[in-house]
Image 1 (tube, one colour):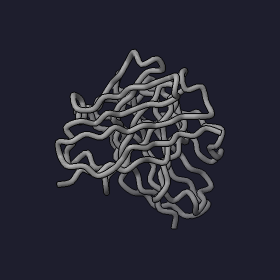
Image 2 (spheres, rainbow over the protein chains, first blue to last red):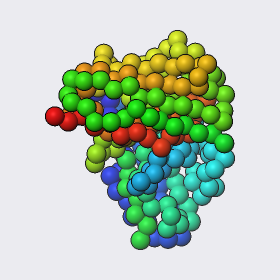
Image 3 (cartoon, rainbow over the protein chains, first blue to last red):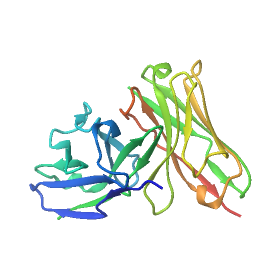
Length: 109
Length: 118
């Protein structure tokens, strides 16, 4: 059974930078895994942030960036704002199905 | 603007069925794959099923395979999720999501709550 792994929780100070990662139990994450990142706040539907590893949607602030880092997909938040406090999920493609990571709870403190 | 509106959730007994609908507007529905994603209480997001733009391809998570069926009606801009043989562990908020090109997930609906309880 394939597992997608994320840090359960991270804490960052306002104005700081933090990187969240997304790994696969099957090996290195590549662009062929079509990594996507989503932000989810309580009481709201999830919001799509990043697709195809490093592409922002038109609504995604420039302080969010995606990449591949050390065999994992990564989401870096720069100049973190209080409103960035949320759960963040990655999603990877294992043809023909998709699997979410367990989520990272990001605290801005 | 893009809208995805889910409906059909409710409370049912184990073993019964529910049919969820998701009405889409504001984008070219017939060109977009569509997905269902769920979130059970206190847990993370789970990918449930996907259907291709023309309905020719459908794939399911192992947890629902054989019990759930995804379908679509492009004339009505609507995607469905028929959920049979429901279990307590299927209790979740169900979201529909658009995928206008492979690996590009864009818009989410507000979600509909399905509760399976005896």
